[in-house]
Length: 355
Image (cartoon, rainbow, N blue to C red; front, side, top):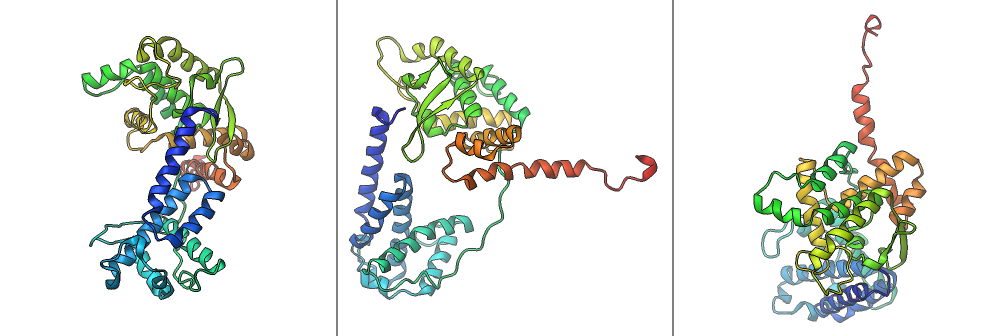
């Protein structure tokens, strides 16, 4: 999937259309802030910010009797000038739990994320003098939550999921098993690719047939943020993809198809992100019961294993396409569980004559 591919162009166009539709629901004075974010951030981030700001303005409408018959886009800017830190704290409580009207039930981390665009909007307004009041300055800041263990597959589980998908070894209905058999090589190729390159699911879904370079074992992808990059893969990936492309992809497409996508659905078009996520979940439930494994968790699995084998955090950061090396540090943090397991096996208090 190169930057100039039709798939990528349509994807970016659809995102922009979505953003423009959402912006129509907001008051006009919010748009300069979103325009500024659009120039400096990824489009998905701006869309998420727009949803969060819509939630805030719907909160104002719901809690202020004067706005009962006012559309969100018509809420006057004077209302914002009257807000104080107590109103922002009430909004955070609204996000934490609200079961009357618009339902919300968010954890600390989610509330902090939703507060980020709100703080940014008020700061932008004050800096550019269309607002004189920033009620978020005195509002409570969410407490820092402890790090969660990174969910990933261990090495036995990696082998097991490959075994399950490659042999269609599912304990499920006969109908579902036969359906999986029709896409056995495709599913094996995708899971092998995810586990051996750390590719994002969106990058995987966007691959075209001509993005494959079999001479130097590489694929061309468009990274998060729009930059083009080449990822290199091992012989396991080469064998799995070659087997799929030569033996199964033509059967899925049928004759006379000009579909460019690498991974094809049973509807004879590009396999979607959601379909890949569902496929991974289906096989992971059997290979690693008790773990909620997604394509992103496979990315974490790859990053952790790569760091364990190389000890080079910058190498891992570069391969995963992280702009900030601090993002990559979570793969080191994921090894803390291994350390705790090792500690449990140490017999610290064994008597000398038992040693």
